Length: 309
Image (cartoon, rainbow, N blue to C red; front, side, top):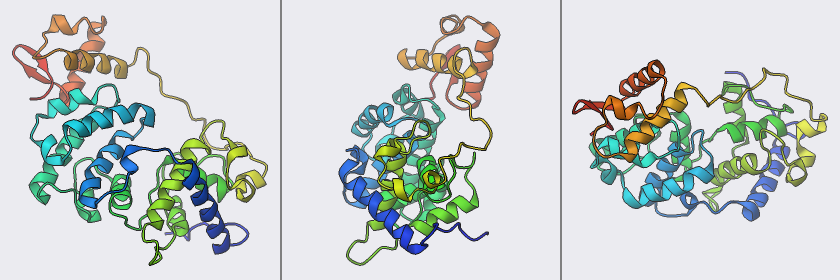
């Protein structure tokens, strides 16, 4: 693995100043999000896991009400595992990427079967849960269990790319060098402040979400403006490939969403005629229905189709 990029100009001293300013900013500017409230690890781990899965490619404003309803209905993995997977898909609502609901249900079932109903703290056990990858395992380890582990999401990557590496945007996909950099700036946990590492991780993540945004960053409000390597270089434009937003209207994603919405809002099974009201292109509708069945989000039932039982 290549050596991690160094903080420009002052090495460890610059990293310490960067951390101090971001942490001070976070103390006064952090959003009051329910999954950040402190609690015992066995109380906090499940809410954190649910939030991290829901927040994948979905903004906080859409996630929070669904997260609250989800935790009210299923406050523990055991509660979710006791219900059919289709209920998880139904409760997922319009968050998008509904396979995440199936993965959360499968993860809850695995937690019950392998860990007595308590989300494990061991990174290997976390990564072994369905739908839990490196990032989600790190986030749960840090934010639920206080572990010193680098949590590297898109926001963190963007802040470090600009502030440390002088680039407008991070690479299109996470690189080993980015992970190494995130680990290099992660603070140690002093005896009098053992939660400093996870607090840094959430603080730099929050800075990327609220100030150092992908488009139209609010550089005038940034606590590390004068330290930012990108600003010192004159804020050069991104030299990577043009990043285009995903289309929606008329795509298979839209059709799948309409079919699922119809199935969520209607108890029992729906026949072909009922599903035809969701989309008038027969070939596209059939293709999308088949893909939903293949993904396990829809099952044949009673001469029609329904959410999984």
